[in-house]
Image (tube, rainbow, N blue to C red; front, side):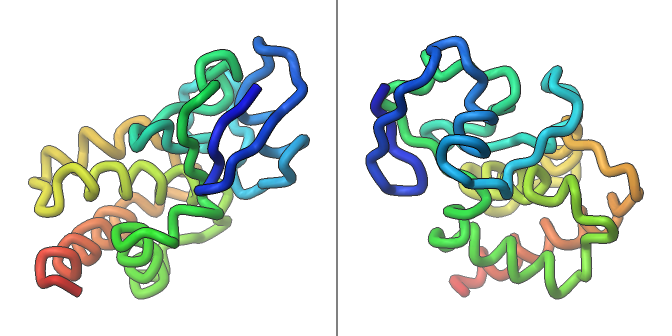
Length: 154
């Protein structure tokens, strides 16, 4: 199975039904994408598939063959990713940090398609990501902060 992960071509010899999450974590040693619920409900495993956020725990490898996967390890190489990661630090978003890679991936997908999101846009884009520590206000502030940076050309 051939795909591109974080800009690098990779070939995996794995069961096509294997969830992308396990291929990333076990075969490629990209452990930033987290296992949360295993049912695509919490968002901890969010990655980008051809630029769109998907839940890696429920995405079979057969669905990603020939496509581009971006994980938390690779998102910082983009302008949007850099802005979001910097905003996360500036807002001191993480508490325990477990959900944060999925949160960042969802925020990046939102800002890549809508650099100046409305409150409703942010709510909708982030609604599938759960944070047990309740850092939702800091997450929202970080998304807004990254939006300001991106809108100013920074």
